Amino acid sequence: MTTVQAIRNFNTLGFGVLLSQESFEIERSLDFASPMYSQQIAMVKRLFVQSAPLIVDIILASPERRAAIARLGNVYGQLAQLVQQGDREALIDEFQAAQVFFGKSNLN
Image (cartoon, rainbow, N blue to C red; front, side, top):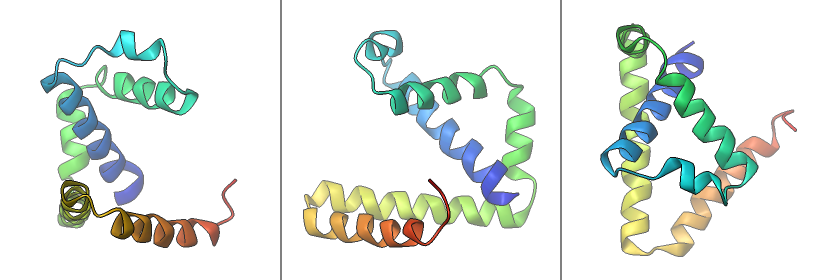
C-alpha cells in the first residue's frame, strides 16, 4: 500500500504543487499534449478535488510510508543533479536500469 497509495499520491501532489507554483497554463498545454500527458494532468486534477486532510493522512500514515517518500525524494534529487550537470550518459544508464526492471514485469 505504500507504493500504491502514499508514493503515488505524493508524486501527484508534488507535480501539482510545482504546476501551481509556476502558474502553469494547464488548459493551454492540453492543446498540444500527448495522450500520456493528458492522462497525467487528469490524475493531478482528480487528486486536487479530494480532501486535503485525507490525502495528507494517506501520505503520513506510517513510518514506512514516510521513509519510502524520503527515498523517492532522494532519487529525484539524484536525477535532478544529473540533469543539472547535463550528464546524458548517467541519465541514460538510470533509464536503462529501470527499463531492465520493467522488462522483467508482465506489464504491457
